Amino acid sequence: MKFCSECGQPVSLQVPQDDTRQRFVCGSCGTIHYQNPKMVVGSVPVWERDGEVKVLLCKRAIEPRLGYWTLPAGFMENDETTEDAAVRETEEEAGARIKLHELYTLVNVPHVHQVHLFYRATLLDLEYQAGIESLEVALYTEEQIPWKDIAFPTVEFTLRAFFADLKKVRAGDGGFALHTEDIRRRMI
Image (cartoon, rainbow, N blue to C red; front, side, top):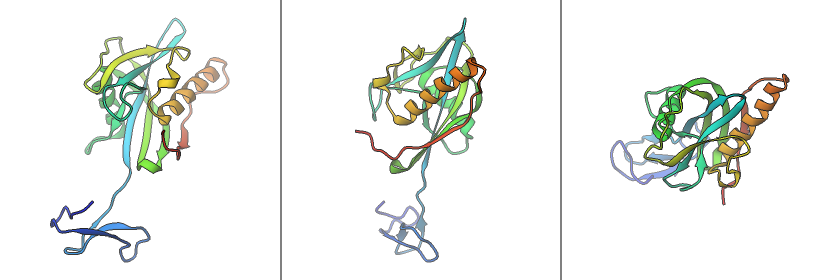
C-alpha cells in the first residue's frame, strides 16, 4: 500500500499508539489501514451411487496453478455468509447445484494471509459444466484423483480428510468431523 484510500496522501508502515503490529498509517489524515486475512470458501461436492463415492473437481483456467485440479472455491464476497460463498463458488466454477452440509475443514494459510473453509456438499444432479475459471470439471473416486496435479495443499488436506472419514463412516467407526490445519509451507 502506498497511498491512503481516505485522502490520497502517502502512507507509511508504523506501529500505531496502543497497537502491537505494524500497520499502514496515513501521515496526513491519521487513518490506520488494517489488513486482514482473506477468506477462501468452497465445497466438497459428492455424488454417490451404488456405493461408489465421487468428488467433483475443477481444472483451473486461471493462475495461480493454471491447469491443476481443485475443489470449487474462491474468495468470499462482502454481504454474503460463508455458506452463501460456498454455494456461489460451486455454481460459478463447476456449474453445479449442491445441498450444503456442515463446515468440514478450516485451514489457516498465514504466509498468504488466507483462511480456507470447505463445506461438505451433495450434488443434486449431474448437470455440471466448467465455468469461466475452469477448463473442465469431472467426478473422481479416491483412486482416480490426479493427486500429483492437485492445485493447493489446502485442497489435498481436505480431500484426504474426506476419504479417511468416509472409510470410518463405512466401517461404522465414526462420522465426518471438522478438521483444522495450519499450512505454513510455501508452494514450490
